[in-house]
Image (cartoon, rainbow, N blue to C red; front, side, top):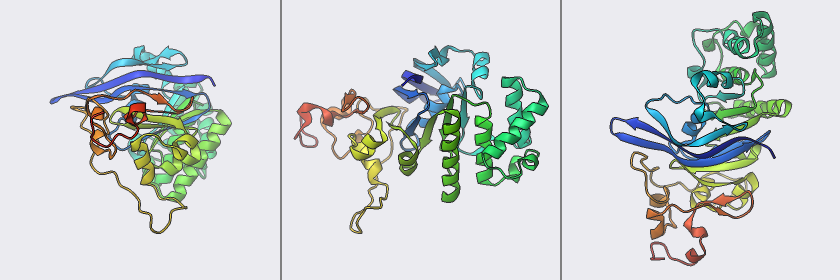
Length: 334
Protein backbone atom coordinates (compact mmCIF):
# COMPACT_ATOMS: atom_id res chain seq x y z
CA UNK A 1 0.00 0.00 0.00
CA UNK A 2 1.09 3.56 -0.66
CA UNK A 3 2.27 5.54 2.36
CA UNK A 4 0.47 8.83 2.97
CA UNK A 5 2.30 9.81 6.16
CA UNK A 6 5.68 8.68 7.43
CA UNK A 7 7.12 9.78 10.78
CA UNK A 8 10.86 9.13 11.14
CA UNK A 9 12.72 9.27 14.48
CA UNK A 10 10.57 12.15 15.75
CA UNK A 11 11.69 13.73 19.03
CA UNK A 12 9.73 16.64 20.54
CA UNK A 13 10.54 18.37 23.84
CA UNK A 14 9.24 21.24 25.97
CA UNK A 15 11.60 23.74 27.56
CA UNK A 16 10.30 24.52 31.04
CA UNK A 17 11.54 26.49 34.04
CA UNK A 18 12.83 23.24 35.56
CA UNK A 19 14.47 22.00 32.37
CA UNK A 20 13.69 19.96 29.27
CA UNK A 21 10.69 17.61 29.19
CA UNK A 22 11.22 14.95 26.53
CA UNK A 23 7.61 14.27 25.56
CA UNK A 24 8.29 12.27 22.38
CA UNK A 25 11.53 10.31 22.05
CA UNK A 26 12.41 8.83 18.67
CA UNK A 27 8.99 7.81 17.34
CA UNK A 28 8.76 6.20 13.87
CA UNK A 29 5.61 4.93 12.14
CA UNK A 30 3.62 5.30 8.93
CA UNK A 31 0.01 5.56 7.77
CA UNK A 32 -1.08 4.11 4.43
CA UNK A 33 -3.72 5.66 2.22
CA UNK A 34 -7.23 4.69 3.26
CA UNK A 35 -6.31 2.85 6.47
CA UNK A 36 -7.09 3.50 10.12
CA UNK A 37 -4.22 3.36 12.59
CA UNK A 38 -4.79 3.42 16.36
CA UNK A 39 -2.36 5.13 18.72
CA UNK A 40 -2.99 3.74 22.21
CA UNK A 41 -1.45 4.11 25.66
CA UNK A 42 -1.99 5.76 29.02
CA UNK A 43 -2.39 9.51 29.51
CA UNK A 44 0.94 11.30 29.39
CA UNK A 45 2.66 8.83 27.07
CA UNK A 46 2.99 11.30 24.17
CA UNK A 47 0.07 10.43 21.89
CA UNK A 48 -1.48 13.90 21.63
CA UNK A 49 1.93 15.60 21.38
CA UNK A 50 2.77 13.33 18.45
CA UNK A 51 -0.52 14.17 16.75
CA UNK A 52 -0.13 17.92 17.36
CA UNK A 53 3.42 17.77 16.03
CA UNK A 54 2.15 16.42 12.73
CA UNK A 55 0.02 19.55 12.26
CA UNK A 56 2.55 21.93 13.90
CA UNK A 57 -0.03 22.93 16.52
CA UNK A 58 2.39 23.03 19.47
CA UNK A 59 3.35 26.50 20.72
CA UNK A 60 7.03 27.11 19.94
CA UNK A 61 8.45 27.96 22.44
CA UNK A 62 8.15 26.14 24.81
CA UNK A 63 7.90 23.16 22.42
CA UNK A 64 10.62 22.40 19.89
CA UNK A 65 11.55 19.64 17.45
CA UNK A 66 14.80 17.99 18.54
CA UNK A 67 15.15 15.77 15.50
CA UNK A 68 13.25 13.70 12.99
CA UNK A 69 11.07 14.05 9.91
CA UNK A 70 7.32 14.06 9.28
CA UNK A 71 6.81 13.19 5.62
CA UNK A 72 3.35 13.91 4.24
CA UNK A 73 3.00 12.98 0.58
CA UNK A 74 6.81 12.86 0.49
CA UNK A 75 7.33 16.40 1.85
CA UNK A 76 8.82 17.13 5.27
CA UNK A 77 6.22 19.08 7.27
CA UNK A 78 8.76 19.96 9.99
CA UNK A 79 10.58 22.21 7.51
CA UNK A 80 7.48 24.09 6.39
CA UNK A 81 6.71 27.64 7.47
CA UNK A 82 3.52 28.68 9.27
CA UNK A 83 2.19 30.17 6.02
CA UNK A 84 2.76 26.87 4.21
CA UNK A 85 1.15 24.90 7.05
CA UNK A 86 -2.00 27.04 6.85
CA UNK A 87 -2.56 25.61 3.37
CA UNK A 88 -2.31 22.06 4.75
CA UNK A 89 -4.22 22.33 8.06
CA UNK A 90 -7.95 21.88 7.62
CA UNK A 91 -7.41 21.18 3.93
CA UNK A 92 -5.20 18.10 3.53
CA UNK A 93 -4.89 17.22 7.24
CA UNK A 94 -7.67 17.80 9.75
CA UNK A 95 -8.06 17.05 13.43
CA UNK A 96 -10.96 16.23 15.74
CA UNK A 97 -10.04 17.36 19.25
CA UNK A 98 -10.97 15.74 22.57
CA UNK A 99 -13.39 18.39 23.81
CA UNK A 100 -15.50 20.08 21.12
CA UNK A 101 -16.78 22.71 23.56
CA UNK A 102 -13.26 24.10 24.01
CA UNK A 103 -12.28 23.51 20.37
CA UNK A 104 -15.20 25.31 18.75
CA UNK A 105 -15.27 29.11 18.92
CA UNK A 106 -18.09 29.99 21.38
CA UNK A 107 -18.54 33.45 19.81
CA UNK A 108 -19.13 32.18 16.25
CA UNK A 109 -22.12 30.40 14.79
CA UNK A 110 -21.47 26.77 13.82
CA UNK A 111 -22.08 27.52 10.16
CA UNK A 112 -19.58 30.38 10.06
CA UNK A 113 -16.86 28.15 11.52
CA UNK A 114 -17.40 25.60 8.75
CA UNK A 115 -17.80 28.21 6.01
CA UNK A 116 -14.57 29.96 7.01
CA UNK A 117 -12.39 27.00 5.98
CA UNK A 118 -14.24 26.45 2.72
CA UNK A 119 -13.79 30.07 1.64
CA UNK A 120 -10.11 30.01 2.55
CA UNK A 121 -9.08 26.61 1.17
CA UNK A 122 -11.52 25.97 -1.67
CA UNK A 123 -12.09 29.60 -2.73
CA UNK A 124 -15.89 29.18 -2.67
CA UNK A 125 -18.31 32.08 -2.48
CA UNK A 126 -20.16 32.52 0.82
CA UNK A 127 -23.38 31.18 -0.72
CA UNK A 128 -21.64 28.07 -2.10
CA UNK A 129 -19.80 27.53 1.17
CA UNK A 130 -23.01 27.73 3.21
CA UNK A 131 -24.69 25.23 0.89
CA UNK A 132 -21.78 22.80 1.33
CA UNK A 133 -21.78 23.36 5.09
CA UNK A 134 -25.46 22.39 5.24
CA UNK A 135 -24.73 19.28 3.17
CA UNK A 136 -21.92 18.33 5.55
CA UNK A 137 -24.04 18.80 8.66
CA UNK A 138 -26.68 16.63 7.02
CA UNK A 139 -24.01 14.00 6.25
CA UNK A 140 -23.05 13.82 9.93
CA UNK A 141 -26.71 13.40 10.88
CA UNK A 142 -27.31 16.81 12.43
CA UNK A 143 -31.11 17.33 12.26
CA UNK A 144 -32.47 20.47 10.63
CA UNK A 145 -29.04 21.61 9.34
CA UNK A 146 -30.54 24.75 7.75
CA UNK A 147 -31.55 25.88 11.25
CA UNK A 148 -28.58 24.49 13.14
CA UNK A 149 -26.09 26.30 10.94
CA UNK A 150 -27.26 29.59 12.54
CA UNK A 151 -26.79 28.36 16.12
CA UNK A 152 -23.88 28.70 18.53
CA UNK A 153 -21.91 25.78 20.09
CA UNK A 154 -23.62 26.18 23.49
CA UNK A 155 -26.96 25.46 21.81
CA UNK A 156 -25.74 21.98 20.79
CA UNK A 157 -25.60 18.90 23.01
CA UNK A 158 -22.27 17.11 23.57
CA UNK A 159 -22.93 14.55 20.84
CA UNK A 160 -24.13 17.23 18.43
CA UNK A 161 -21.03 19.35 19.06
CA UNK A 162 -18.87 16.33 18.29
CA UNK A 163 -20.78 15.82 15.05
CA UNK A 164 -20.21 19.49 14.23
CA UNK A 165 -16.48 19.00 14.90
CA UNK A 166 -16.43 16.05 12.49
CA UNK A 167 -18.24 18.16 9.88
CA UNK A 168 -15.71 20.95 10.40
CA UNK A 169 -12.80 18.52 10.06
CA UNK A 170 -14.17 16.65 7.03
CA UNK A 171 -15.73 19.46 5.00
CA UNK A 172 -12.60 19.98 2.88
CA UNK A 173 -12.26 16.22 2.18
CA UNK A 174 -8.86 15.89 3.93
CA UNK A 175 -6.54 13.05 3.03
CA UNK A 176 -5.63 12.48 6.69
CA UNK A 177 -7.92 12.82 9.72
CA UNK A 178 -6.42 12.81 13.21
CA UNK A 179 -9.09 11.93 15.78
CA UNK A 180 -7.84 12.62 19.32
CA UNK A 181 -10.20 10.65 21.58
CA UNK A 182 -13.27 11.73 19.61
CA UNK A 183 -15.73 9.92 21.90
CA UNK A 184 -14.43 11.13 25.28
CA UNK A 185 -17.21 12.05 27.76
CA UNK A 186 -19.96 10.82 25.43
CA UNK A 187 -22.43 8.11 26.44
CA UNK A 188 -22.03 4.71 24.80
CA UNK A 189 -24.94 5.16 22.39
CA UNK A 190 -23.56 8.44 21.05
CA UNK A 191 -20.05 6.91 20.94
CA UNK A 192 -21.28 4.14 18.67
CA UNK A 193 -23.04 6.66 16.42
CA UNK A 194 -19.92 8.87 16.15
CA UNK A 195 -17.62 5.94 15.33
CA UNK A 196 -20.08 4.54 12.80
CA UNK A 197 -20.28 7.98 11.24
CA UNK A 198 -16.48 8.20 10.94
CA UNK A 199 -16.36 4.80 9.24
CA UNK A 200 -19.08 5.82 6.77
CA UNK A 201 -17.26 9.03 5.87
CA UNK A 202 -13.98 7.14 5.50
CA UNK A 203 -15.60 4.62 3.15
CA UNK A 204 -17.14 7.43 1.11
CA UNK A 205 -14.10 9.73 0.91
CA UNK A 206 -11.18 7.29 1.27
CA UNK A 207 -9.69 9.25 4.17
CA UNK A 208 -6.81 7.88 6.25
CA UNK A 209 -7.39 8.09 10.01
CA UNK A 210 -5.11 8.22 13.05
CA UNK A 211 -7.30 7.34 16.02
CA UNK A 212 -5.96 8.26 19.46
CA UNK A 213 -7.91 6.42 22.14
CA UNK A 214 -7.86 4.58 25.48
CA UNK A 215 -10.75 2.34 24.42
CA UNK A 216 -9.38 -0.95 23.08
CA UNK A 217 -12.91 -2.05 22.16
CA UNK A 218 -13.08 0.85 19.71
CA UNK A 219 -9.68 -0.16 18.32
CA UNK A 220 -10.82 -3.75 17.71
CA UNK A 221 -13.93 -2.57 15.88
CA UNK A 222 -12.53 0.25 13.79
CA UNK A 223 -8.79 0.00 13.13
CA UNK A 224 -6.45 -1.84 10.77
CA UNK A 225 -3.23 -1.45 12.76
CA UNK A 226 -2.35 -0.64 16.37
CA UNK A 227 0.62 1.34 17.70
CA UNK A 228 1.24 1.03 21.45
CA UNK A 229 2.99 4.04 23.00
CA UNK A 230 4.49 4.49 26.46
CA UNK A 231 6.93 6.99 27.99
CA UNK A 232 7.24 8.93 24.74
CA UNK A 233 8.34 5.82 22.79
CA UNK A 234 6.74 3.05 20.74
CA UNK A 235 6.50 -0.29 22.52
CA UNK A 236 4.73 -2.44 19.95
CA UNK A 237 3.02 -2.26 16.57
CA UNK A 238 1.01 -4.74 14.55
CA UNK A 239 -2.30 -5.46 12.89
CA UNK A 240 -5.36 -5.52 15.14
CA UNK A 241 -5.43 -9.32 14.95
CA UNK A 242 -1.73 -9.65 15.87
CA UNK A 243 -1.93 -7.27 18.83
CA UNK A 244 -5.10 -8.77 20.31
CA UNK A 245 -4.27 -12.39 19.54
CA UNK A 246 -0.55 -12.46 20.33
CA UNK A 247 0.70 -9.36 22.20
CA UNK A 248 4.46 -9.51 22.72
CA UNK A 249 5.23 -6.59 25.03
CA UNK A 250 4.34 -6.84 28.76
CA UNK A 251 2.76 -3.37 28.63
CA UNK A 252 0.47 -4.39 25.77
CA UNK A 253 -0.54 -7.54 27.65
CA UNK A 254 -1.35 -5.51 30.75
CA UNK A 255 -3.44 -3.04 28.75
CA UNK A 256 -5.43 -5.91 27.25
CA UNK A 257 -5.70 -7.57 30.65
CA UNK A 258 -7.45 -4.51 32.06
CA UNK A 259 -10.32 -4.76 29.55
CA UNK A 260 -13.37 -6.95 30.30
CA UNK A 261 -14.15 -9.70 27.77
CA UNK A 262 -17.34 -11.58 26.96
CA UNK A 263 -15.57 -14.93 27.37
CA UNK A 264 -14.30 -14.18 30.89
CA UNK A 265 -15.32 -16.58 33.64
CA UNK A 266 -16.69 -15.32 36.95
CA UNK A 267 -13.44 -16.26 38.70
CA UNK A 268 -11.26 -14.18 36.38
CA UNK A 269 -10.19 -10.77 37.62
CA UNK A 270 -9.45 -7.61 35.68
CA UNK A 271 -5.85 -6.52 36.12
CA UNK A 272 -4.64 -3.02 36.90
CA UNK A 273 -1.18 -1.65 36.14
CA UNK A 274 0.45 -0.64 39.41
CA UNK A 275 2.49 2.56 39.55
CA UNK A 276 2.60 5.59 37.27
CA UNK A 277 4.21 6.43 33.90
CA UNK A 278 7.81 7.73 34.02
CA UNK A 279 8.66 11.39 34.57
CA UNK A 280 9.78 12.64 31.15
CA UNK A 281 11.65 15.51 32.79
CA UNK A 282 14.24 12.84 33.60
CA UNK A 283 13.32 9.92 31.30
CA UNK A 284 14.76 6.48 32.02
CA UNK A 285 17.81 5.32 30.08
CA UNK A 286 16.37 1.90 29.36
CA UNK A 287 12.85 0.59 28.85
CA UNK A 288 10.37 3.16 30.22
CA UNK A 289 8.14 0.34 31.51
CA UNK A 290 10.93 -1.15 33.67
CA UNK A 291 9.61 0.07 37.06
CA UNK A 292 6.13 -1.36 36.46
CA UNK A 293 7.02 -4.57 34.65
CA UNK A 294 6.65 -7.94 36.42
CA UNK A 295 9.07 -9.54 33.95
CA UNK A 296 11.83 -6.90 34.07
CA UNK A 297 15.49 -7.91 33.96
CA UNK A 298 18.57 -5.91 34.95
CA UNK A 299 19.41 -5.08 31.33
CA UNK A 300 16.00 -3.39 30.93
CA UNK A 301 16.96 -0.63 33.39
CA UNK A 302 19.83 0.89 31.42
CA UNK A 303 19.39 -0.29 27.83
CA UNK A 304 16.40 0.33 25.56
CA UNK A 305 15.76 -2.76 23.40
CA UNK A 306 15.65 -2.51 19.62
CA UNK A 307 12.69 -3.53 17.49
CA UNK A 308 12.22 -7.27 17.12
CA UNK A 309 10.02 -8.25 14.17
CA UNK A 310 7.77 -11.25 14.75
CA UNK A 311 6.13 -10.89 11.31
CA UNK A 312 6.44 -8.34 8.51
CA UNK A 313 3.81 -6.19 10.21
CA UNK A 314 4.36 -6.99 13.90
CA UNK A 315 7.25 -5.79 16.07
CA UNK A 316 7.86 -5.12 19.75
CA UNK A 317 10.65 -3.50 21.76
CA UNK A 318 11.35 -5.86 24.66
CA UNK A 319 14.42 -7.73 25.92
CA UNK A 320 12.21 -10.78 26.55
CA UNK A 321 12.31 -11.35 22.78
CA UNK A 322 16.10 -11.83 22.90
CA UNK A 323 17.21 -15.49 22.58
CA UNK A 324 19.36 -15.19 25.73
CA UNK A 325 16.33 -14.03 27.76
CA UNK A 326 14.54 -17.36 27.56
CA UNK A 327 14.34 -18.91 31.00
CA UNK A 328 16.07 -16.00 32.70
CA UNK A 329 14.54 -15.28 36.09
CA UNK A 330 13.38 -11.78 36.97
CA UNK A 331 16.28 -9.62 38.22
CA UNK A 332 18.99 -12.15 37.35
CA UNK A 333 22.25 -11.26 35.62
CA UNK A 334 21.92 -12.14 31.94
